[in-house]
Length: 346
Image 1: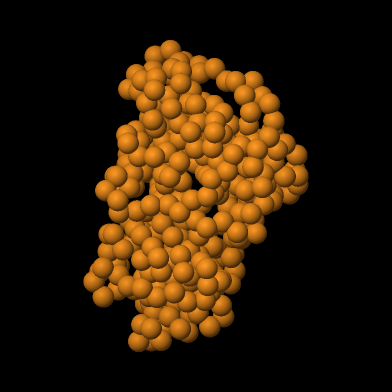
Image 2 (image 1 turned 135 degrees about the horizontal axis):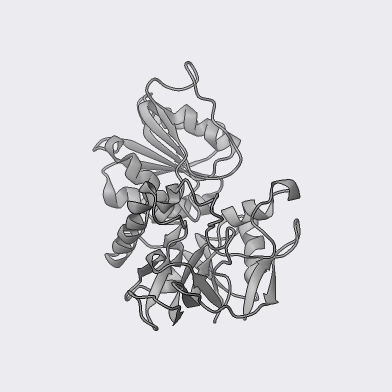
């Protein structure tokens, strides 16, 4: 089969021929219908050799959907031909976190050598994908896998972040979304569907701000050194109850910390390499700062339920497997509207 692999530290990924995998006992093989690209893939491929821990060659793609193609011995609960999405943050399956579906918080996965697809295990930007356990599959039903595959991360991650701060998002509250790309534009829709908050979106150009307004932001501001002051003005000097930073770079974190209200919450979702200064005098009184990671299996089911009801959607651009390296180049350049989706089987 053909797959997109990261083969050499510092070099771009390339399409290669590899052996088609066979499912072992308990495993499921998917014929991949769609795979999403993510800035976290870029983060992985930007790591220097001494910091890279994901193995080489690495088949990329941690957002995946496919048709069940073959079952390993003992697999029940799915049938060949089922259309499914892949829950990405695989855990041990038996600890307290995994027992409640929060495999994203499994404390034992790394020590056991368990890694998500595309982030250690072979990923979804390939013609076929092995899924380690049926519990990591969620039925798509009549949802279009191409248009919805990115919800496995670009929907699940903002949903998880927003669910945690829901008590802050009462009527009359304000939520700031920094970065309106792949995750942020879905986050805006989730905020509008689940809360009564006013949503203020920040990004770096008019095209991205236009997308933010299209998907429901009440206000759209340039993300610059003046953004925090403008948010304070819009909130009567109080600041926002919730700030969701989907970039995570030093300047955006500074804006987030300068925008949050007392007793508010900052969610640093993006992995842009920035860090927050937290402490007495640096953080508004009783404000919380949190770093969410992906989401639980039950939250993915809820996200897909929202898609079934038409409450959220993902803006996408599609690419063939041969075009996948170019898609990563465009992602790096900030030239993707919403999310890039690769179709490994056409």
